[in-house]
Image (cartoon, rainbow, N blue to C red; front, top):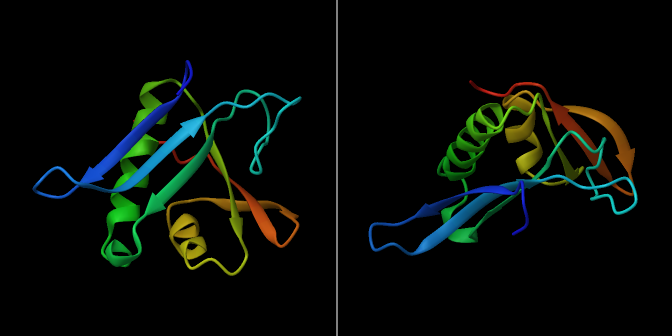
Length: 114
């Protein structure tokens, strides 16, 4: 990682990771796909196929939203393909479409949990 990165990991009982979520700030000169501005971190989420649909992504994102609030960030952004099933998760957690970009959406949420 680099300074300012924050991440959370989901592990099974044996300590094996099966999901992770993190956020990072990007610059306007080197933006991420979900870039909004240099003061709004962009998040990423990954959950192994066999662990999807069990609430892992929700738990990771809720934890990350709390971390964002603790770090003093007012919001988070992300990029998601329009046909990605996780789109409904993001909407349920307060993310809204800001713009369409190459078959995907840039989304923004001010729902950080303090």
